[in-house]
Image (cartoon, rainbow, N blue to C red; front, side, top):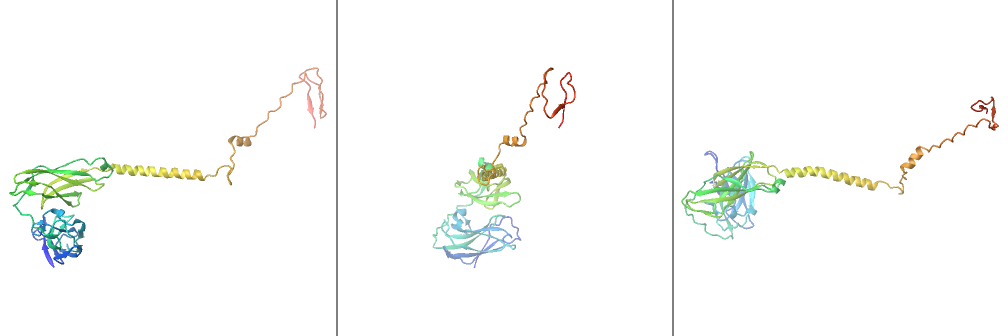
Length: 338
């Protein structure tokens, strides 16, 4: 068993134990497997395990995670006592050995341990020489520049550029410094991502640096962007992200359009299934005019009354009528007998 202790647990008190990593074997070839055990970490903390080249336990991962086999890395969560056990495959990192098994926190305060490891058959090259101590410090206030564009209104990931100016206060140049950009939302702990800047800051000189910052799709609310170099937080910058109202509008329109389309399709199906006149089993339609004639038969006009006979004119008496009085001045008066 090979054990390594942590050298970069930020914010720990003197009484708090340092994180420890133990490897089941010191050397293995590509395709093999190594068991990684740890203790002394924060309880219920997410850790990332990587095999990195161009690194030693004393100097750490010199080239940042660009020197690590990131695709073959493994994540593990510590238990309530701060311990873990995890197997990980042995892979060849993109940089030559000396190599380490790099274990670092992901979601809580930064802590890391580098345990020496040999990848059998992987090239070995000397580490770059140390030329002295370089020390970077932020000389001006950081700011977020850029615009997310119209697609962010519809849920695309918001993105900005973190712009700041650093100065080298040390006695040695700093080449290709690796920064860490943390993103915190609300009460949640910051999630750190490494960003490497290509360039050299000479002693007593300054440089303007831009690092990309991107949130997850659909992110909105108040965020805190932090900048860290080594174990020291250099700057913090708030970022208020608006709500993607385009997504809300899309769902509102979807809730209106889909029911209307379903209703129209249903009405079309009902209209197609409705029986037509002349079809088998169908009922013959009658015109409104024919129905009205059946309900309301046409009334015949009463025949016009015949004009009264003039005086002196003889009127024939029908057999079933007999006169019972003499004719008056207005004409004869008759009374019918049946």
